[in-house]
Length: 252
Image (cartoon, rainbow, N blue to C red; front, side, top):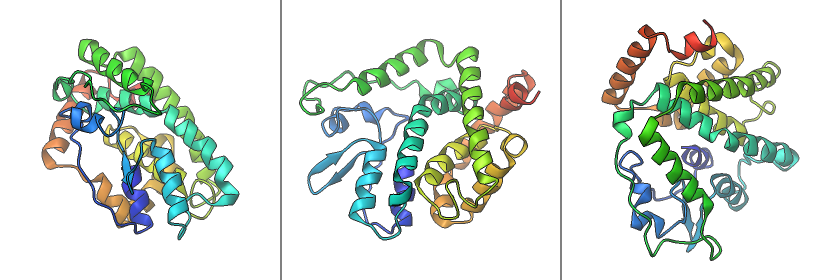
């Protein structure tokens, strides 16, 4: 999603190959023959394989320098923010799977590691093992209340900082759109889908998000099938009346 928005803003032509994460196609021998990790995105360009999401974007920004989304004068700050954003990936996953996606929709079996699995610089990659461990634990116990609350509070803390930045500028790092705007747009999109009370807790973030939604390249990435929206809504209603909605946890 982040990579697609990035390439859309820079008008980069590419051929996409959809990997169905719900069916765990990212654990298939085909996919893991390309990358040692069971994670997306992956970029293959002129035979070179790039697997780190933020490294992919840095590579593309250098190769297609028109409309810099990682400007040189902000590169250090952006790199720092991207590390922080990447560290929040598990928190976003916890919140999404706790409040947005019913557990029965994520029960597809994970395929065993392939003997022909790709390596990273000739070595096994720990990221794949960590991802497999997450899914094994999720299958056993789902996302516990304690884990979900901890992730919500961590995300809320970071969103408060973003909200403060947006009280002074149109975008996160000033009045020009940069990569952190794309990264945080995705996180905010998922949180709002899970009924996180963005408009109450972080009004500047909410206004910023709504302004980005007016751009087609952003709006396209937030579209979800009607059946998915229906299931998510029913899931939300159940949580609301059981007293476990995000709003109840954070606002009361």
